Length: 132
Image (cartoon, rainbow, N blue to C red):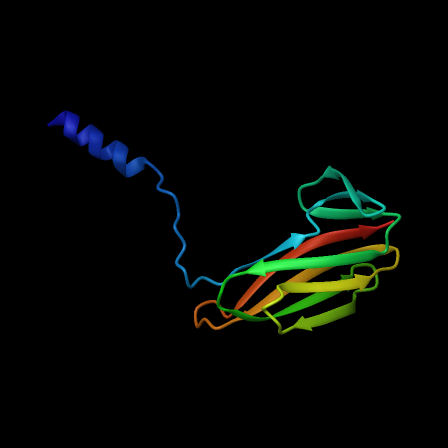
């Protein structure tokens, strides 16, 4: 009896992988991936920021759950505390994309997806961008 109790306790303590429902709303920035870039080429990966040296164009790509119907891209200037550029992408067939030009500065790149979901109507992802 003690053996069964120990086995049941061990099974209860094992963390089962989290399986998300198919209807969960999510969005993720896939390009640019966090890293240090020199003239558009990634030379070193980073954890949560993008540092651009010698390049002033940014091609943003995002992918999201099937229930997302529109995506809003925004570039927030951290120093001036203002949104300097934004874009709505309503065309899911070609993916969620945005090409923009940047000046030197420190930015927060935010992507928000509007979804058909009562529990999670908005999905958000962001990156920290430094342009030198």
